[in-house]
Image 1: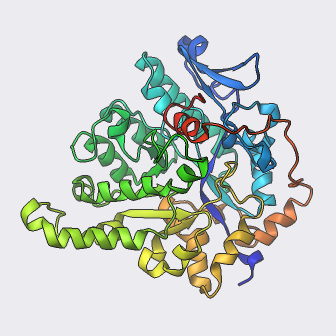
Image 2: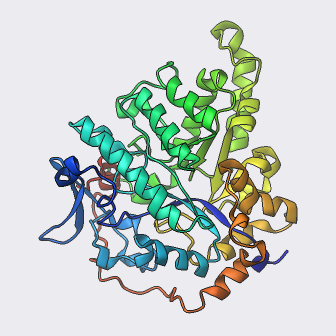
Image 3: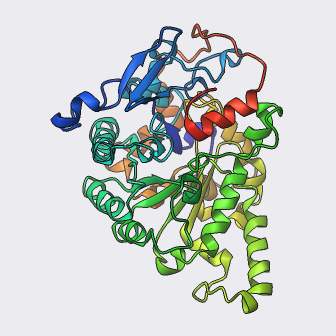
Length: 428
């Protein structure tokens, strides 16, 4: 296989929601209270909702932007590449980057809808969650069913309503829901209670995958407010390690053995140690802790119910048999600052030295198709889905890095500000 022959499905990209996204989907009685964009006098397009604001943080939309213009200040749509918020331009950018299809996580509501969880008017919040999901499924992903895999927001504040929404979006063809890696940190019941059983039961019965994105607990690992941002960014996979271990030892996966969990943007290289350690601890201690995993060891639960993905993880690829090559997927993370767009295929290909064509196909697209019940080839022929074929269709797309006219990044309490953004969505 050559680089140009790969077929790439990214299981973690992001959408910067367009200003008009609620227009066709929010009920009339809530129209004047729906989230809306307000331009700030000192710059930045912010989403106004109830008594607060949710910014489009600069780091969330840097595709095509020079690294010295990355930063935490709110940005404007005019300072973004149109592929961030325009679905037609997004698909062109995907083709130019050699990517067949992708899942697009939310931005302004935060990774799993924490913005609506914090709302005071829960009737309005519920209407907003449903309107968001309708827009995402019908307009955004629905515009290109061979290119975009829909993902829904959950109703975080009520497990029964969350279950009902899962069943509603599943009927619309959505097989993914974003959720919190640690709901306790959002002030909600944890995974070790039975509170989430209605939600998990609905996901299990409808085949909806629960996606846990790093940062979906509104917290990140920070060693010190004075540490440079690289410390916290480097430690982001720790959130995924915590989530995997917590869920493996919860009874949730025991009660719902068909439930599927995707660990989004967590990487793979750490997996063999974490599950090996979980097995060791279980074998040595469950006789006195009385932990009952239903006859399975932690590693078996992981291999039967969890999926992981990576942007650039040569170590994870080298130990793929220990990770579980049938559960590994790839991500591009467009348009975030960690993304390898438009050179994702080249970056990924460097990880594949000595890897069989069979394993490459699994990691690049077959596992994602199986995980999310997604079949792009029912719409687009396989021969038009490769890196080479897609790029040939997008030869006129400009992928050169150019200034977006943003203010330059400033030194200072960067890690503290980044932590504030992760927890509240608001730069300090």
